Length: 102
Length: 225
Image (tube, rainbow over all chains, first blue to last red; front, side, top):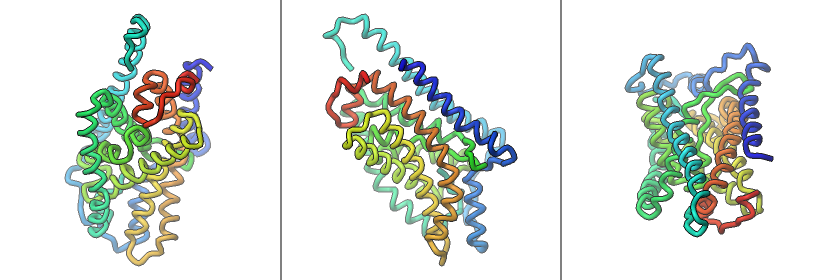
């Protein structure tokens, strides 16, 4: 199978995995398992007092901005690498065979 | 993976810090060695770290009606081993603990242990094991990435179960596992598909460098398959 079809299929599959939850479970709240875990700690041990508070709590808007920034930084590096590799392959095609590195 | 700030008692805070420290220290030494001796591997390490950055920032919905973060550690674990991965994971977890109220400084040791060490450890050895049985590269990468993600959340479940004083660890492990490990199943599979895609790309683009990183001999038929 050609790569582009293979990758397209893989992407479709990924989209399906993360879209199906909304179809089979339309009324769910999709709360984070992190928060559910913290609640569960208090349920199993009602006397437990979290003994440290986070140093700084960003406002919700800032929090989503920082999450986006984190993803953007990572995506930037991955995108740079993929572009770099494609250009490198084009370049190598035009070079004599014995001059190839890896 | 994040246990919220203050949700692990001081005793366990210290235990997990001590457990993680040797791995992160050894990993930091390995990173500087790779930078010195194999500068050509730097870019691949940056990309492996970038996958952890992107994936651990996403909160993905799961069929079970909850959401969770993938870990993204599988790629780095396969290519650089679990010590280097623990360094990359620590960078991400510190960022999230200080700026995003995800995880915390008192729970950092535990979070690094689950996401940076146990998950990548499982991914690394599953990968080696499957390679020994001669299973093709992109497929082994998929399985290893899925299990690295899942093992991380199993570890978290165990960490929380252990921290409840006087509780039955087995029952509590199943209880916390029901929250974390269950949610994580479809998310780990989705993450595995992404890592599989990138591994496939890397195999075609840099077969020699990839084999060098994996410590395997060049096999030209596999690169073209």
